[in-house]
Amino acid sequence: MTSNDQYDCIVIGGGPAGATCATILADHGRRTLVLERGRFPRFHVGESLMPQTYWTFKRLGVLDALRQSHFVRKESVQFVTASGKESRPYYFTDRDPNEWSTTWQVRRDEFDKLLLDNARAHGAEVREGVGVRRVLFEGDRAVGVAVSPAPRTADASVATPSGAEEISTDTSSEIRAKVVVDATGQSALLSRQLRIITPDPKLKKGAIYAHYRGGLRDTGRDEGATLVLHTPNREGWFWYIPLPDDIVSVGVIGDPLYLFHGRGDDPGATLSEEIANCPAVRRRLIGAERASGVYVTSDLSYRADRMAGDGWVLVGDAFGFLDPVYSAGVLLALKGGEFAADAIHDALEAGDVSAERLGRFAPELTTGLHRMRMLVHAFYDKGLSFGAFFRDHPEHRDRMVRLLIGDLFTDEIDPIFDDLRQYSNLPDPVPLTVKG
Ligand SMILES: Cc1cc2nc3c(=O)[nH]c(=O)nc-3n(C[C@H](O)[C@H](O)[C@H](O)COP(=O)(O)OP(=O)(O)OC[C@H]3O[C@@H](n4cnc5c(N)ncnc54)[C@H](O)[C@@H]3O)c2cc1C
Image 1 (cartoon, rainbow, N blue to C red):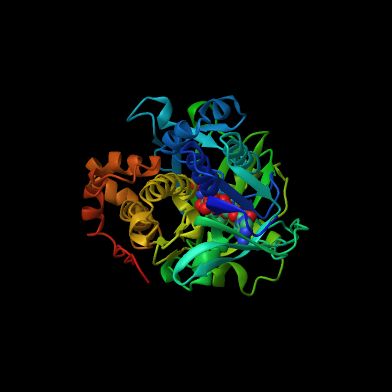
Image 2 (image 1 turned 90 degrees about the horizontal axis):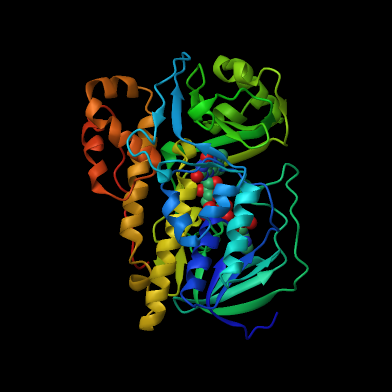
């Protein structure tokens, strides 16, 4: 690797946000380099998609590959209360009976590889096993990256059970580009480097999760449903996501104090304990066996206070991460990657890679993110019963389905929040700074 390499854009991280951004930049004819510290396929959490991902998949040209894959079709989400009462499923196709109202429950090792290989096929240069150490600046402007062997400590979100990760043998060097995109997921390399990241104190949660083989699967249109099940003590909730090959992804999320303190140092034992204490999950896993390691992620939910600066942009989890109860992470990563790629292309055309120009999409993206954040805060409000809310306001059920589909970028959704505010203390938007 030489220090004179010059690209239009360097994308750090080859997850869904980085791969999307790189594919679209390459489609625009931009010389794009993706640096990914792992080697794909690799395990990653975040398997349940939202139907609105369809439009980005279409643009990326991966719909046929997804249709032909063995990923499970997801047509609904269902909630189970602490007492075990099941909500009516929120069927996406009931409001709009089209292909784009369904989506997939994916294995992220395969899905992420599909997207990254697609970026390559569209002309992006992808180097795996190359970790970026820091983003290089001249004054306030990002001008490239310093790369080095990938760090030994893995990202929590992509951690192997042992914490080990394959490392590159590249020696440290610098690569320059007109624009640097941080798509490093929860590593959030650049916003940590710039110290512009703030946790969401009310959503400081941890998660313990694993794959199980042989768990109960519903049939027909419910086969691919995501289940969100409260624990009986309401201290946490489970996801139950059917995947291919008779696997279900099961995870519990709760306050770190509840999940990790005074419970020994074996997260697998805590996960088994939580399953045993939750009849609605326990009965689904009778006879099932664990088919993966046990993974832990903590410190969920944070956001950077800027999305772009001179010569740099943040996309996906590198900008912000929201508690995964409604499965919005991949959608927001795809949208961020797509919006950023178009903004970068326009900025390069204009010869102006200022913060204002690169970050022009930030208000739209953060408004969508905020809609989801309000819904997440409402979910954790122990005083709020969604059942009671929808009995009082049946007119909002359609808006709820639209939110679960990921239809986040329209103000037609907002009346649900006007009324929800009467039932729950919804958060204010987090301000977005254009220039630090
Ligand atoms: C417990 C949990 C459950 C979740 N469930 C869901 C769900 O059901 N549905 C959903 O949509 N979302 C879910 N999410 C969120 C989802 O996983 C993320 O939002 C999504 O993966 C974000 O994509 P990304 O491309 O921004 O980051 P990532 O997918 O994390 O990709 C980042 C990439 O950057 C690479 N990288 C990191 N640092 C460097 C570096 N220094 N140099 C080079 N490369 C680097 C990493 O190796 C990684 O491949 C969940 C998250 C958690 C924690």
